[in-house]
Image (tube, rainbow, N blue to C red):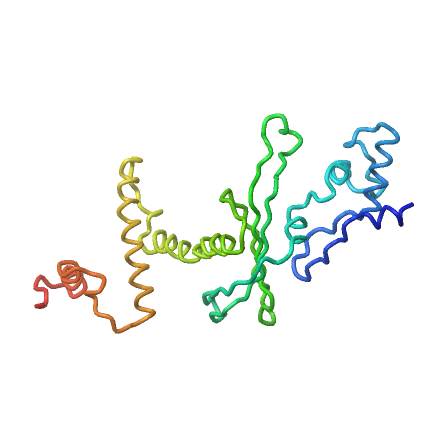
Length: 248
């Protein structure tokens, strides 16, 4: 009988070589637990662990929805296209260009059974991207994004991923705000002072980051590209400890 049932089940995806996660309960073991509970009337949570069928919750979920796993559902969809992404340098790793395979699918996320009466199911759009051939010794880029923005085409999938790829620049901006401007080390006393100061330092951090990015493109650019005359003259006086700024 098991051979007949097994032929009706979707094939299992191969596990990753790196970070494969916990070994899932085999379908046959889960079926044994399901039949035992249904045959005895036992509560799912009381399924004996000694049977080797996993937890009762695992068997209940497998019975309710064999395709319950979000990753499994999205990976079962055909590839929607490819994109190339410039991965910035990090520590001892040089900048590289990654080629990603894209998939997308509408999915419905079910609430935990403990709060099923309080929370509704949530319809979202899952977007998956994985690097095809990463360099030797480097774990491939892999993203699973959940978006409320409707995604029905490869072009829309690319747009959502480009939004997400901006996170590297945003993280750098946060680092400038925290480390360069030392926003966390300042003592404001009141929330009003904190809000005003953060609004000011947020702009300063953006200007610093923007200047840094421009300098990487062309280190010979004059300061007038990013600073007004009064600004660069004030900085000159500060750096050189003088009250007489240079002429125009």
